Length: 350
Image 1 (spheres, one colour):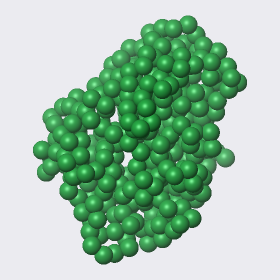
Image 2: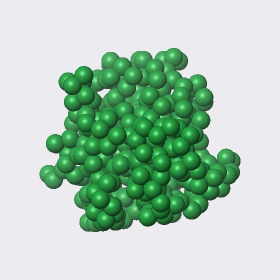
Image 3: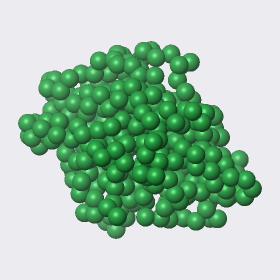
Image 4: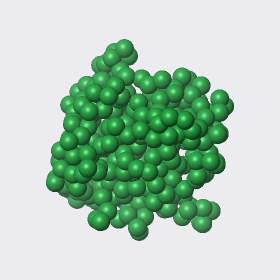
């Protein structure tokens, strides 16, 4: 069976990148591409970097009222399915009726939140351009909510808007597309979120178009993936990205989602949670138990915001008790150990 390109997502790539590091030690206007070069290059002071995209924040702030946003309860069982199954073609390849016995035992339980891709899997739709509206409608019909998956920090060559990224990259001194996430996954390259040639302005313009598609398809929230370039460093990404620059980009993404009536997840970027928890409505995390990083996510739960957490390699018997405990109170699940994100396997902790 041909591997779906959506399985080439950040979880395995982040895993490979971390190993490499270890071995070596709503429609508010966004600035258009081609704007004047900004001072927010790698290592720029926070105040300077923030000024470069102040227009983004000021334009989007207050565009959507807080009451209009869906914000899930701290305890919200979730499912992570980025790969479609042709068996469920009528619902965009998503198994919206999935019901499984949790690690705690008892009767089967159903997700109240589905994190799915913006587009229907090509193996289901026959193309890579069909928004997942059918899945969202089916999810809503069951009383659940839908989060729209978007890769915001790396550029995947199988996306329908890829040519726009490539054209901009070539016309601006090859300054946008960096290194592949790994040798195993060369079809996804780190984006340069600096702005010395207007890269960040262009990326935000492109993300705005993607978020608009999420909103038009009826999604309730958005997950922006790969928003932690500053943690990986130039040896992994190809770009020198400062922590301050990452904050500017991530906050602009959160504002953008809110402006279009969508709540927003912070994906990983654990080191910046203290600075970003107020801007994001919930967290999505991969493998914090695997890497002993879960304590950093407590701030979300303490703020009354859920943590949607997934493990791949670790057995539920080794992490579910910890995830369910009051000290964490995470919505944790186990997915396939090969990092695929199909409807099954799926094991919620509670």
